[in-house]
Length: 482
Image (cartoon, rainbow, N blue to C red; front, side, top):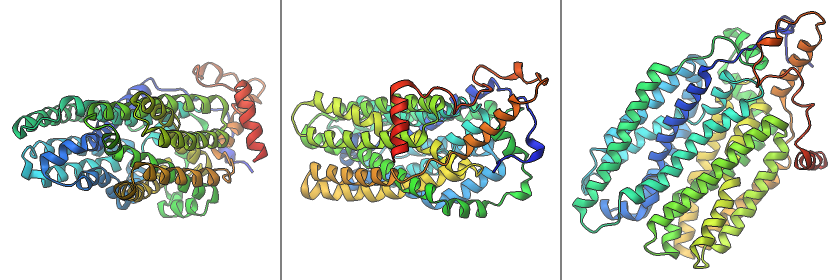
C-alpha cells in the first residue's frame, strides 16, 4: 500500500539549500572534537597510567564512561531531538563538549585524576547529543540521491576525530620521566582542545539552522506535513521494538561497533605488549584503522546512493570485517610492524566503513519513524556491547594474552554475520521516494518542477538505474539467494 496520503500525491518542487554543506561540515567538526576527547587517554594509556598513578583499567574507564553515560540518556535526548529539533541539540552538544575540555585543564597534577574524570564525563554527556545526529541531519537537509553520502560524511567527522586522537597525543606527549615536563605536554593538548571546542560552539550559534526553507525530498516533506499531535515518541519506540528486521540490525550493529570500541580502547595495550616502546607507532596503527575506515565509510555511502543495495552491502561489509579481524589477530605477533599496519588498515576499511551503513539501513527499515530514535537505539546497543566487550577482552588479554582477546572479537563478528543474513531488505523510505517519482513523472503538461531539481535529484527511480556493474549484480544476486 502507498506510504503517501492523497493530499501529498501531487508534484512538488524539492530544492536543496546551499547551507546544507556548511551545517554538515560544522556538525562533523564538533563531532570530530568530541571523538578526539574520547580516545585521547586510551591512545597513550601507559603514559596517563604513570602520570596519574592509576591502573590501566582506570584509564580504560575514561573511554568506557562515554559508553556508560549514553545508555540511560539516549531516550531523553532523542525525545528532545524530536520535540525541539536539530538546532537545540547541536547547541547542547557543542557547549558540553567545550565545557568538558575546559574542565580537563584543571587536572594537570597527578593527584587530580577525579577532575579529569569529571571533564571526561561532561564530554560523554556531549556525545549523547552527537551520536544520533548523522542520519537526522542527512534526511532533513539533503536530497534523496545524496542522503547516504551526507550520512557517511557526518560519521566521517567522528571517525576523523578518533584518527586524530590516535595520532596527536603520542606526538604531543612523549613518554618522559619528569612529571613536571609531562604535565606541561599534557597542558598543551588540553589547551588546544579547549580552544578548538570553544570556537566550534561559537560557530554553531552563528551558522547552525533548524532546517532548510523547503523539504529536500518527498520523504521529508511527508514527515514535515504530519501534524504534531499524530506523533507519539513512546509509540514510535514501541513500533521500532516490534520491527523484527530492525531488532536484528540493532543487535548486529551493536556487535560490530562494540568490537570496534573494544579494539580502539585496548589497541595501545595490544601493540605495546608485542612492540615495547612503540607508543607513537601504536597511535599510527590506530590512525591507519580510522583513515582506511573513513575511506570505507565514504565509499559505502556513495555506493548506497547509487545502488540502494542496503542489505547486500551491509552483509558483504560484515563478512569482510570478520575476515579482517581474523587476519589481524594472527599477524599482530609476527614481530613485523609493517604487517600490522597493513592488516589493521584492511580491518579498519570494513569495520569502520560499516558505521554509516547501519544508520542508513535502519532509516530505511524504520521509515517514517524518526531517524534520531532509530540511530539512538543502534548506539545504545553499541555502547552496551562496547562496555561488555572492552571489559571482557581486557580481562582475557591479562590472563591469556592478546590473541585470545582478539579471538573473542572474531567469534562475536561471526555471530553478527550470521544474524545479518536474516535481515530482510524492507526499504520503506525508498518506497516513499519511488512513489513520488512515479507520481511526478505522470502528469502530461505539468513542467514546473523540472528546473527545480538540482543535479543530485532525478525523476527516474533510483531503484531502476544500473546496479553498479559486476559487483552490484553480484551483490543483488547474492541477496536474492539469501
